[in-house]
Image 1 (cartoon, rainbow, N blue to C red):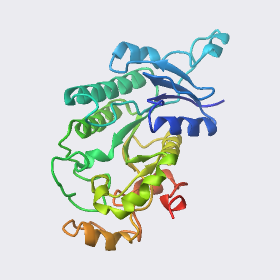
Image 2 (cartoon, rainbow, N blue to C red):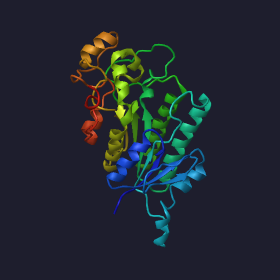
Image 3 (cartoon, rainbow, N blue to C red):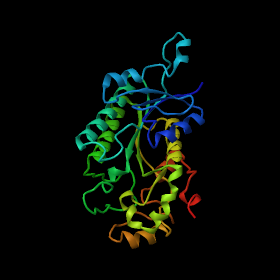
Image 4 (cartoon, rainbow, N blue to C red):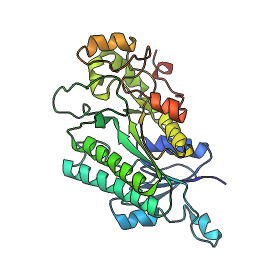
Length: 296
C-alpha cells in the first residue's frame, strides 16, 4: 500500500518540485495550499493553516473522490511535510510574516500529533543562521554551519523559523513523535542554473546564503529520506547540496572572502559552508544535482 503524505505548500517554489519527486517515488500526496498545484494525481485542498479548525479538518479528510468508495472514512496519514509559509521578508509586513509562519507551524504539528500522525517534517531555513536578512554586513560565528550552531536571526522570517524548530522540539518531547526540521538553503529550480555564472563572478553576492544552495529536486529527496527514517525524535538537518558555489576550493575561498571567520573543523575540498554532513551520514542523502553539472 502506498504511503499517504500530506504536503503543505506544495504549490510553492520548493513544493512544486518536491511533490512530484514524492509521487514518482510511489507516495500518495494531498497538497494543502492557498492556490492549486497543477500536477496529475495530486489534489489541492485550499486551506488556511493559520486557522486551527481548517488545519485539523484538512489533516483528517479524504485525499480525493476515490476515498468515498471505501465506505470506511478517510484512511490514516503516514506523514506530514510542512513547507507552507510566507517564504521571506518583504512580501507581507513583518508582524504578519512572523504570526502566520509561527501559527501555521504550531497548528500543523498539533493537529498531526493529536490525530495520531507520528512523522512530521517541517521547513526551517538557512536564515536561522542570522546573516541572510541581517541589518548590515554581519559575519557568521564560524564555518562550517552545522546543526548545533547558535542560531541568532534578527529578522521576522528567520525568527519565525527558530520558533518553529522550538515548537517541533516541544511536541516531539511531549508526544514521542518523530519531528524533523529542515534548514533549507537557497532553493534553486532546474531553470535557475543560468544565474550561477553571475554568482561565481561576484562572490560576495552569495555571502548571505553562505555560498550554499539546495536543488529543489534534491530537497524532495531529503524529504523522502526523512519520511523513511524513523525513531530519531526531534532532529534538525541542513537541507543543502554538497558543494560551495565557488570555483575555488572551500578553504582557499574562505581565506579570501571570509578571512575573519574561524573554521570549527577541517572541511572537505569543496564542502559547502552550510554543511550537509549530518543529512548524508544520518539519512543517507546523496545529491543528484550538483551545480557543476549545469554550469560550465
